[in-house]
Length: 432
Ligand code: EPU
Image (tube, rainbow, N blue to C red; front, side, top):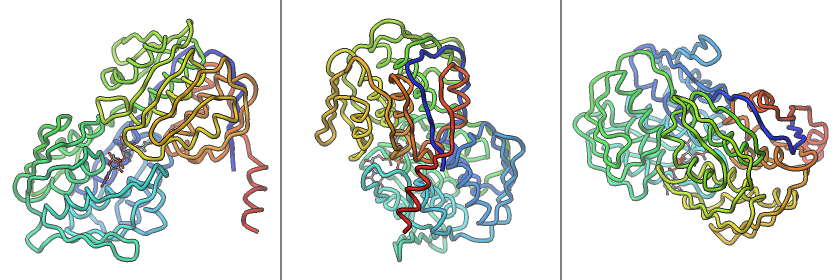
């Protein structure tokens, strides 16, 4: 087991290059199963969720080759199984995309109920309703989702999403891409990775219009062909480093971003006292003055993203005054609060609302990451705190951040990865 050790209190200066978007990659890689050909996917982040989804594709019979660190070639012409084993799909939420992709290509999928970070109940009823609207039969038996298309294949349908679900929107796009007829998704989610998936599928011959708006039209096509595609930069990774600079102070050029995707994050950081400047495909962020309080409510895109809520809360723990944070998407996204309190933060949580009274400083403490973005927020708190912060359970953070330690060290942070003997001992005790 490994942990991060951070000696905080240092402002950050320099440049950080942003990797490909995790939540686009974990959808686009399964979408390659829809293609009767070879896909070359570039700008793939090297993170553990990607490693896992690639392993699942290999298990299904795809020929997966890493052409270089961030380019993967997937040949799905000779898939041998539509059954995704429990021990792999349980480890990540995005394994639900295998249902849409396998159903869309082969008319059948057996996938264990998805796992992932514990942010609440995380149902998949909207995915199931959409597949049924397209004509599939879906049953959950012994922990597995069994989805089967009728003999005539899936057919187009008009689907109204009760809630603008990112996963259900993308899964429906995958299942419908090769169906017969027209599918219309109303009240679709609009996140940047939805547009990215549509662009990927269209570049392979699909006919999808309107991604990025709340009505998406998918005209089914008989076949998809191979090709090359580059994944968009990660909005949340960029936002996380922007939040880190806001918390510590300093001046950092964040490279390889789509600045428009960051507007919803930049607006809040500017309100807190940061300066943000767009320079082509980079944003420069700096802060030297005081950190000011703000209120934040997380909403679907283009609102403030839930996946940035813990990170901005880390900044607000040391802002002047009282901030109110409202979580609008997940029911259980404040599990990091107990860890922040160990550092001296003043936070009260009541349901979906957190009231944060800024303190003049945080003090370093031993912490345990409890999910991906909570872990990233603990890194930010550790960078801003006085003294040493140890963060255990970093496998959560490695699910979504490529080379986090190297990137932060590159801008002057005192952070390193060390073997965690205590944690190992703890695990041994638990095992006994
Ligand atoms: N929902 C349902 N039924 C469903 C699906 C969703 O009720 O069938 C509800 C959820 O419980 C939640 C809301 O709808 O309250 C939104 O969920 P959504 O389906 O949009 O989330 P998701 O697709 O499961 C993706 C990201 C999350 C991110 C959310 C919201 C992936 C793999 N995950 O999850 O990312 O928080 O969208 O933007 O794309 C992360 O990266 O840290 C992360 C958790």
